Every structure is written in C-alpha cells, then in structure tokens.
Image (tube, rainbow, N blue to C red; front, side, top):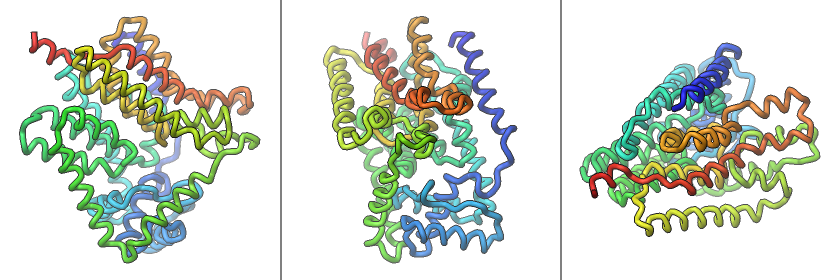
Amino acid sequence: MPRLLLFFLTLVALFNLSRLVREPRPDADRPMDFRTCYVGQAVLRQGQNPYDDRTLKRGWQRITRQEQLLSRTQPGLPNLPFLYPPWAAALFGLTIGRVPYAVAWPLWYGLALLSLGLLAWLWPKVLPAEIGQTVPWWHLLLAAAALKGTVPALLTGQPTFAALALGVGALAVGQRRKHSFWSQVLAGILLGLAAFKVTLLLPFAAWFLWQRQWLALAVAAAVVGILSALAWHWAAFPHELLPTYQHLLAQVRAQSFDPADPDYPLTQGMTLRLELGNVLEWLRPGSSPWHPLLHGALWLVALLRLTWLRRQGLRLANWYVFLVLSTLTLLTTYHLYYDAILLLPLLAFGVGLPRRWQWALLALLLPMLLPLNGIALALGNPASLHFVYFLMPLSLLGMLLVLLARPVENVVTNSTSC
C-alpha cells in the first residue's frame, strides 16, 4: 500500500476511534442492536412471539425489573424491531442469552472487538493463496477502522462483526483443505452459524457454490435447520411466527421517507443505506416497485461478465468473485453503511492495480470514509447538499464497474499449470 494512502487511512481511523473518547461510557441501552437480539431470544424462549412489538417491549421491561437495570429507551418500533430469522433467536438463546443481560452486553462488546480482530487475522490466510503476496493483517484492521461505519456499529453492538468473523472463518477452513471431509464439515458449521445475519450470507454461500464444495453447504443448511427446529420448539404458537414477521416487515417498509420533511433524509435513516434503490427513490419518489427489476438487471449483467471471463480462459480468483458478489449484495439488498466492512478484500484488489487506479479506487471509497453527512448537517442540512447522503451507493456502483473491468486471476493456479 502506498505510504501516502496508508497515512491518510491512519488519520481517518484515528478520527473515527476518537469517538470512543468523545462519547459517554456505554450503558445497558447503548448496545441497542445487541439488546434487540437478546430480548428477542428471551421472549421466544418463554414461548412468546418476538416479532410482536408489544411483546418485545414487555420482554425488555421484564428483564429490567428482574435485573434492576436503569433504562431510558425501548427496543422495537419505530427504530429497532426484532427482524432476525427464528434460527438467529435460537443461536442467541443457546449462547450468550443464557447469562443475565447485565453480564451479556459487556461480553458482547468484547466479542465484537475480538471478531473485528479475527477478520483482520483471517483474511490474510485466505488471500495469499491466490494473490501470491501477503496483505498485512494490520493494513486490514486499519482499513476496517477507517470505514466510517465501524466504530458506530461497535458502539451499538452490531452483530455484523460476529457474523463476518464466522463467515471468513468458514472460507479460511474451506480454502485450506478443500478435499478434507472434516475441514468441509467445520467450514459448513461456521457458515451455518454465520447465517444468523442472513443479509450478509449471499457472498459466502456463493464462494462455496463457485468451488462446488457441496458438503460444506449441506452442513450449513443442516445447522440452520436444527436451529430453526429449536426455535419452533420454544415457540408456544409457531403458526403465528411467520405471519407476524411478515406484518412487521410491512410496517417497517411503510415508514417511507417524505422529501417535504425539513429533516429529510435523516428521519428514515436514508443517510445510512447502501442499496442503489436508495438513490432511485431519492431521484424518483414512488419508484420502489421498479427497484427489483433494476437490481436484477445489475446482477444479470455482472454474472454474464463473470461467465464471459471464464469462457475466455481466465481462472478467476475466488476472493475476486467474492468481492464482486459482495458489492452486488450491498448494492441491491437492504444494508447499512457499517456492512461495508464486507469489502475488506478491496485491499488485495488494490495491490495489483497500477498507481493511478489505486488513487481512483480511493476516490470511490471516500464516501465510505469521510463524514459527508456530518458536514451537511454542520452546514444546516440544505436541500442542495442532500445528494451527499446518496454518494455511498453510487461509489459502490463505481467500484463494481472497476472490479468487472479489471478481473483478477488465481496466480497460484496459473503458475502451477505452466
């Protein structure tokens, strides 16, 4: 990595980490994303429906009374309902949900930090096998800290880090011994556990599909099936889970943004979203029925490009395909800005680029690094600056075009075939 670029990322990372000093110490309410998961599994284990908002709130009130916790906020609508699948509640209920909440939330903070470190440690074990050189782990950790969503996500107890650590762990195990039965079983178990954050699962599942590692996929499906069966067993009224979940999703989607709102687009979290539909809705309000068609077309074009490259005889690196599909996943499904940590292999992609392309890639990454929305707010949030809230998905679209334009081959495979 060029020294000037490394220096720039260091400055951004230090600015982001300073938030840990500037903000008050976390309390029981601060890890709000983890709190939703904890309360959801507690409600389910009592045979109640975690997708019912009133039930979820009563569950939290019960926990605060039992543990004598001071709480000023509630989980659930309008901000953070429990939208994880039933097998996620079962996983939390089997693990950290078994300890009191007062103990669980500090443990979860520790697990989130450990998971972030594991991401930086595990990716170099996957990448050198195909790029022929090592990306230092601390470069990856520095890049993760420089992404502007990482520190806020850590503070809110986001499960993204644990899910990604499990997913990359599955890749590392599966990559190391592709033909070992037990390695494939272990990779499948890790992948199945990572599926609790189902919106991030697609690139990891595609990795194993691309390599035709069917055993790992079968084991992952079995893990999800077992956890789902446990969730149904805990639920006293399992027939109500799915319809209540669908109704909750409809309520969340109904909270559409209003461009006439003086605080638009802050009121509906549009400042945080990565999918391309976010830009389309801003440009043309009410266009959401057409978004799946455009997103589908984007997937089709990208997959046709990958297929064409393979037919030209290129042995595409597995991590390169993972990166393309990760970018597509963030662009076309509901993801927030902290999920951009999925793109850490961009460092490996940048290593092989000419210097001018490296700087172009950095320019595309700037909306993921700089607090542009904070700058807009500091200037009074005028309508003329609302476009900065939508630069993140546009930058992802630019990254996708660069990735498809400059495919990366598996250098190890090529060298062994010569």
